[in-house]
Length: 270
Image (spheres, rainbow, N blue to C red):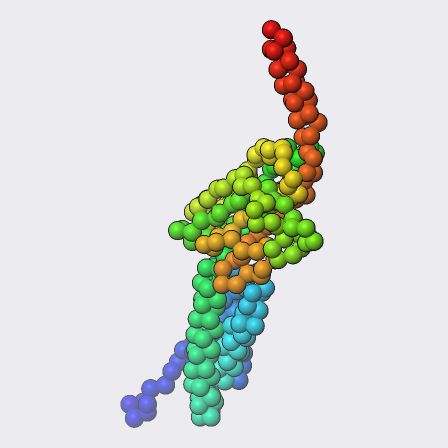
């Protein structure tokens, strides 16, 4: 009739009821709101491969970032639960504030996660050294690795013959005699495209001298430190101290000496 207001058809009412979320009822959007912030944050950690290092280096800040995005997801779920067709005035009041709180917590959590990832990516770990000597102490094989180096940084590698100061052991902070060291090898290596150094060095160890140890050091700072000193502002110095026999090669030297003496006597007779 012309005097009556037009009403929706029965089909339109059914479609509207099916598409409009009902108040005080958890819909799929609410479940997605709970999972999405957490999945995005964990995906960031997974993509950068930093989750393990963050658990060790910054566990409290890591859990704070995860707690913030979990709180944001909970707020989004509650807002989705309260919103929809038939919600009360008080429900609308809470819905707006929950959405605002969720947006704030998501932003803070994600910014904190980004800060942790970028800060941790710039942290250089102390280099690692694996070194072995041959049975006769004549050959050294050393494998040194370092990671997270900046493009303009380098890894320094040193090999020295050293003599322990009388009365001290290799566990002392500065165990070796100042003038009892013989430098054998120096190498300075830059990182690859991923900021890593992976190098194997094989070298001969000369006989002679009263040296007691072979010292292998690797460091990324401007100068090397004591092997006992913990890392400070830089990654610190990695050390491997190997025992060597001070009398190594003595038999070979004796044979060479006898050969030289015999050659000298035969030459003088001529």
